[in-house]
Length: 57
Image (cartoon, rainbow, N blue to C red; front, side, top):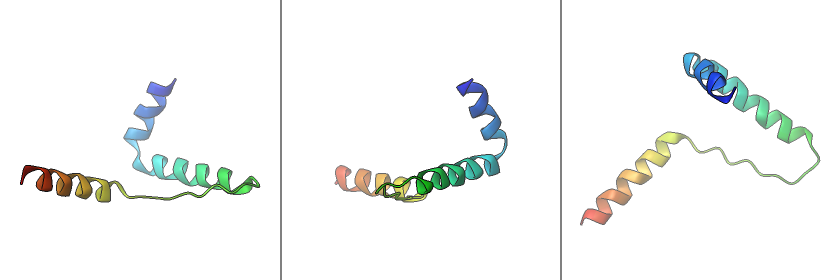
């Protein structure tokens, strides 16, 4: 089931974004103190490149 869902989401990037928004909405409706920190994957890729550059020096 998870594999099939992953394939469907891969076919439509909008589906992934909608699922992310749904998840945030579900977390937000509960009475809790959860903090959601959204980090774009581009930042993680950049951090990895910087780390590799520093490590090779």
